Image: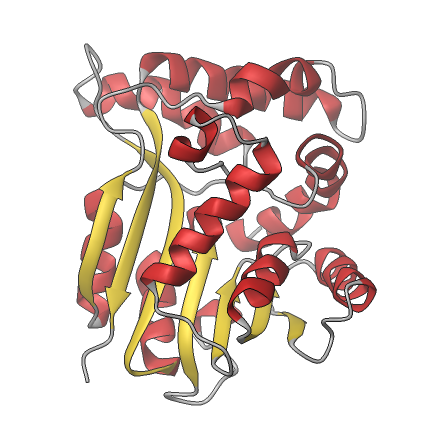
Length: 277
């Protein structure tokens, strides 16, 4: 079975778990906002606002959000910028839920959601230079051929526009410096959370540069520290006590992620790439 289809199947169950625990925002919160004491949902929104600000997204522009899921971040980014967004993912159940939420918020004319085929990210159904910007929030990590995705996003962006986003990464930390030491903790995360292989800051930077982008931002959002935040402080008991569909898989996934966080080899990164004029 294609890995991409495994991701689609994973989210058939994950949507119940993720929504129950994380609500509309299925990604990490902004570390500085968390440190300032903001609630999780608002700290997630702050990170989304940072991404669209770095991309220079403005009212009236057309933006692609890659891996939109149930649409929480897509809809928030549309609200705060006034831009029109198209969110895409490969799970139609998530897409239908995102469309319903857009309608409830009165944003259906501004935000649309589209389901792609499992490998359609390698040939996106959009014209060359037809978008003013693109975003991703912890979604590219599920894609096996990240280089192909970045090439396609480069193709559909207008010259001078930007791709910005954040994602899960692996890294050396403390006593865990070798590939073997890192993978001892990362391989269980990959297996249990439907990742083909977590990348590094440099991996994403290289893929983006190979696609033609000039990379303006490439950084670890938690440099020199273990990546914990509100996910561990407040949500860990909910993950370990989750009893919905495929509960054992999500509990085991949380245990693997806790171990990778504690070892310091798991973190989150942010990138902004500019398509030259």
